[in-house]
Amino acid sequence: DPKRDPEAIERDPQESSAYFNKGKILHALKQYPEAIECYNKTIELDPDYSSAYFNKGTALHALKQYSEAIECYYKTVGLYPQNSSAYFNK
Image 1 (cartoon, one colour):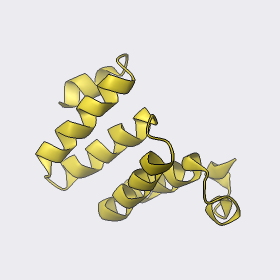
Image 2: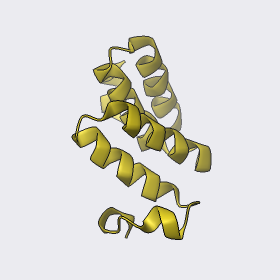
Image 3: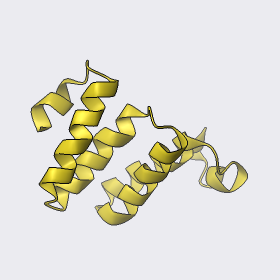
Image 4: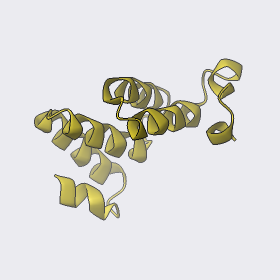
């Protein structure tokens, strides 16, 4: 489980959820640029990872990069229309 395994990325650098979970930790620590890097890597490995777009949007919003955040929320809705938070945030 990558959430509980800080070495998950080293063992399997193609595991998108490992980057996503690292991004969530950095996000919680308010290290938004670093979190965005992790979300970008998640998206690179798995372009349909809707939660990565959503979390990237919230990190961009925290950095007052509103246009980019809205783009992420639109992408989230496109991939996962049931995500009501994405509608609210955009």
